Image 1 (cartoon, rainbow, N blue to C red):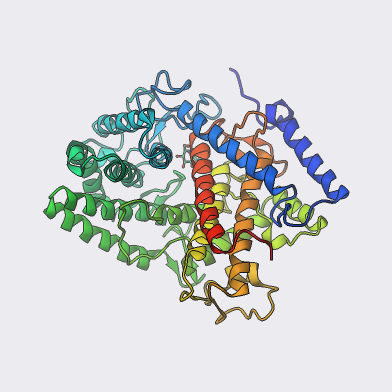
Image 2: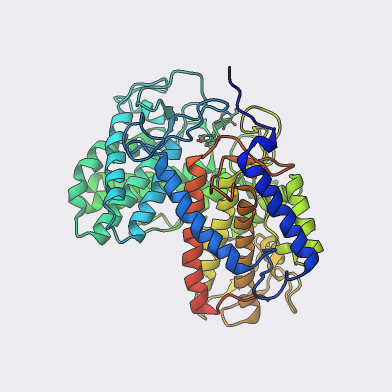
Amino acid sequence: MYIAPRSGALSLPGANKNMKAFLLSALSLILGNTTGPECPPGLLGSLADFESWLQSESVIAFNKLVDNIGGYGTNGDAVINGMPIASPSRLDPDYYYIWTRDAAITLAAVVDKYFKGGAHNTTLHAILMDYIRSSERLQRVTNPSGDFTSLSGLGEPKFAVDGSPFQGNWGRPQRDGPGLRASTIMDFINTCVLLSETTHSSFADAYWSVIVPDLQYIQKFWQQPGFDLWEEIDGHHLYTSIAQMRALSQGAYLATELGDTISAASFAETADDIARFIRSTYWSFGQERLVETDTTKRSGLDSATILAAINMVTVPNRTLSDSVDLYPWSDDILQYLEELIRSMESLFDINTMRIQQFATAGKNTNLTGVGIGRYPEDVYDGYGISRGNPWFLCTTTVAQALYAATQYFASRTSSYTIRVTKKSEVFFDRFLGGFPGYSGQGYELSPGDKSYECLVSSMFHYADSFMDVVRTHMDQSTGQMSEQFYRDNGYMCGAADLTWSYGAFYTAAEQRASATKEINDFIGIQTC
Ligand code: NOJ
Ligand code: NOJ
């Protein structure tokens, strides 16, 4: 049996280059040239280099994502049309399957690209239409989670690439899939209506045959436990509940547009029920913060919550229940983000080394981004069980949340005030800790204040520093990303060419581009 190389870091093509980049950046420290506006606080090199890498990698990442889609990519020959494989890796680990979740999340990146291109790209349109058709087909495949008639089969997490059921043991059902899938399809429909002179009614078939079953699945099963997005524990999970609530809110809007008023009311009602459930279930009074899961098997700090928060950000025509304010700029999420990052800073050797390196260069290490893993107690190393590592998609998700919050703050008018609260204090301390007059809880700042400008630019630099972590550990010569990078030497590991790593990178880079526009209108990017 062939065993793919894993810890033999030197056998990985990107490894030597990564080490070289690491040494070169260390050298540039000794030679100086690491401060000043051309070298922002979150980076050791120049902003211009960073931005040109970001731009080219964003294009590469999107192309590599498409490469994993059935009917469109070089890795997708045997795969049903419009569905991505999680990774082309077929052995150690075997990720050569269609996961409902990975598919919905990465196709959401395709919708975003289609939207940004003004709905003109016919290939992207074809991919998304195929995704709808193949979703309809997979929904009707009887599988170990159940069947279509009872709707239970919609909770099945993964399928073989030809669309046949996967019969092996697995953590099932996973109840985030139907909501994620329905949301991606509704985002696509809304984009088409907004940009290409079509009407909602031209998507009535997709609504009745694909979206309604997914939404009815949620209505029937949302109260029941299921496996989390990491496929490990059975219970209720914030990420899953948000995916369910978001889909039903969007569904209520679409149903109204299509004249299905009875369903619209019913979807909206369940969305509100789930919103109440979220409020009452995922707050820990002991820890005084959100928790990702209602089981006590984990501390509750988990990048899944940040993934949920970025999923809350509105896209065209998406209307969400106001009763759950878990946007990236909300107090709950800012507090949680800070606590998650802190838990990761000291967990991985590569993080402490990076912080040390920035300190040696005379940088403000509060703005040094680090590698982020799934959750602190993680033991999955990408192949089996040992110790968890930082993940590409978790690291870019933290960056995306910071960009989204930065964009939000940069686009407020002068009447807006941030009031530092007991919850958000830990977060704001990071950026304003040394700022003259800053006093923590109770401190107020508004657009136009120096402290507000400092906050906005520092958050942006900090977000860049997380993207820079990805730059350090990916294969810079090919633009490839796997699932994880080793916690103590930084070499890539886990499934190669993970579709989700590429999708997450692309959306984080897009969020940066939108944030940049707002900041330029506001103050321009500066260093304080
Ligand atoms: C594979 C799953 O996809 C992953 O999430 C999990 O951590 C490992 N199996 C270990 O159980
Ligand atoms: C393991 C991850 O934990 C899970 O979220 C993902 O769906 C699968 N790998 C496939 O990428």
